[in-house]
Image (cartoon, rainbow, N blue to C red; front, side, top):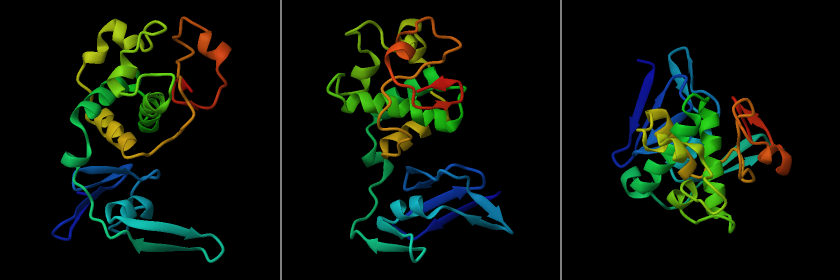
Length: 201
């Protein structure tokens, strides 16, 4: 099945060939690179595995080695770690804005929402950011009603990865599809950072 599951009794980790994340006790950890199947063995990047095992990871570039040390903690399960309303609304805005975008593009859209949550310029909740009308409607799916559509599994997983703290950008507060945008305000007033899929951030 090109999948592997490892269980220690208190921790269950699952990985799948070509996936960009592993699951651990209902949590989702981004692998950045795809999980590889080499001669029947799945190879998973070490950073998400370290998170799953609650280990601190230090890379020594001179010695070219990784040091892992225990934090003395155990992984909190997903049903206790994630807040259901945050997953729901972050997943909905990711689906509405980036449903057809690559997985990294979905994460980047989620990052923009969470960057706004942390910014003093915007409301301090995901729901508040999505429905913010201080300077007009911030996200077009709120006007179109597509914000209420059910998010796909990929959008929900991307939301959880964002809530785990994985970030493509801690700076971006805006994104736009320049081929569809009817306003030039963002491109005229905000510095360009990068493009993922059809979105400029």
